[in-house]
Length: 394
Ligand code: FEO
Image 1 (tube, helix red, strand yellow):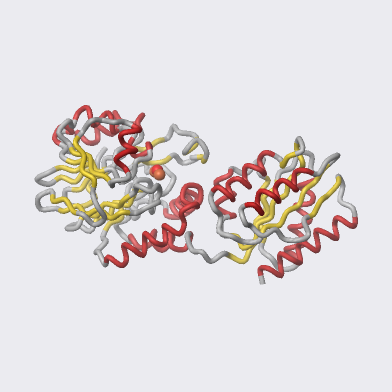
Image 2 (cartoon, rainbow, N blue to C red):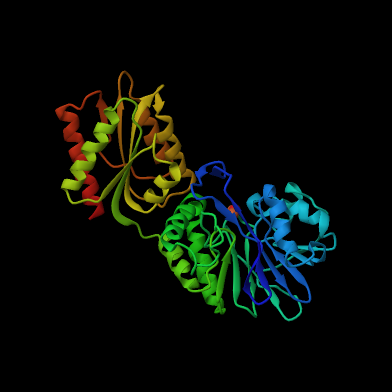
């Protein structure tokens, strides 16, 4: 089904209720949308494609508006296959179309698909006239890949922002912000930003500043996932600014694994000690909390604490995987507390420490090591760590 979002501008995207894990990693309890748009003027531009398996429904949506063979430009803001998987299908039909993307996208297109259409690589702020409407391309590096750009429809004030300002959650026919459940949109946007864009938070700030500095009139923000913002486009911009702010929050997240309860007891002791010191704390058992929720909670916490049993002389796999997310997603630097439990060897917490120190995170002292049940001495070390964390937050 299509919907008009501005005069001559149509949403032709699709909902995905089948994919269980986005990027094979992040749960999608409410699905996800792949947004695609048609700008119909003397020339017809398609802005963004959809994920491959949704090409039939997408082509039906396009056919409700135009004959896909008559598309003149296929604008690819981003090459990731959730945006381009259906490109080969449309390229078979729109044989006279020209691909429009940044110079860095061109080799990716050839590597991924090589659809053999004409191509036009566009510089930052270059424009293409469609007749009475103009597309202006705004390079938006690392939002979310290096080749990414926004497309601005000048006359209608529509900014197609690709992954930026996107959200998890299928639309279910509620396309616009004034139709959507904004509480859910807020939660699913924040989880989306945290899971997908945490490595590039500074580029969110830069991208927003760049668009603000251009002084362009933005009446509609049309991302590639989640709702289209027509009532209050600045609502989502302000949220993204807040979620990507380098300023951390004065609270603690404890993320731990536990096989038989020893590590959990240590985690709960530390939580109680911190709360007694007036510190706000959330704790996640990584065997049960889905990682995108933990990342969302943890990415802006002023202090992180990881707790791990030793497992085959290494950190507990789920804790190690989370430590990899901290490092791989380049969580903003902040102090990290560590505690570990063991039965006959204590290598887990030692390896965690090395991994995090190698990535230049400061590890708070003391690193607490617990041999089975907590002894008075180990309880004392937990209290000392809690005092250190509280002091750092002040
Ligand atoms: Fe929606 Fe970076 O893909």
